[in-house]
Image 1 (cartoon, rainbow, N blue to C red):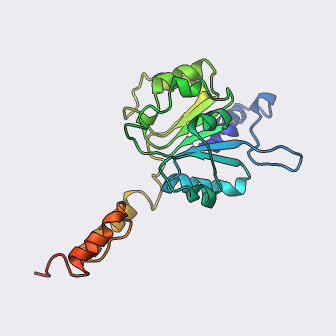
Image 2: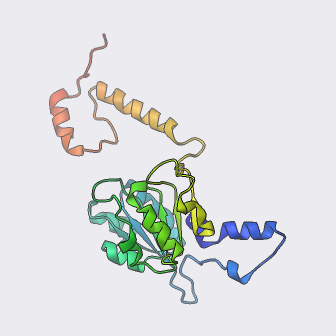
Image 3: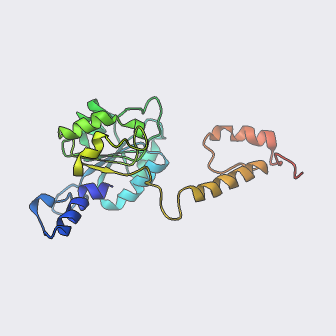
Length: 235
């Protein structure tokens, strides 16, 4: 989604299919630092958990500047992923791309709205592949209409499926929309999740510590209670 927006892929595709060729207004954005002194763009990651960290790792070879905001992860996570820790307002002001990787909570609901858009560069792009409720869609549509930011790429929405009359569907190339299936790829999705989940349940029933435990603080109590003994008998 980031490349499609910054490299104007949809516009270029349509232009060539109309029988035209290169045009000055189809210039793209060069992402990484160059030897001529161009510093590269700044990408701001809101949320540096499992997914945000993975995105940071994937972006490392692009030679972009990575900044991030996440008050809940260990501080060494930033150093390990090559991301500079900044506050939320600084991230919004300095980023050319703002990408959300957070869960939906009371704190994150509508954490991106009119006030946040006002802090951003008019050339900036928003990407939300986390949860629709994180973004105030009405404020986003208005901000795009008024050219307060340049574009948005969304895989998630406040109400799904997205209403046919949503103003987001009427903004042309300023918006790239996807039907909440960024993780829907051949060989991925629910199938491996079912396998992993089943194996975790079976390990727990055998009295073993399941993998991928979220609340790791309970593991000592788990071991004390079951001590490696099966939770249920074979019968």
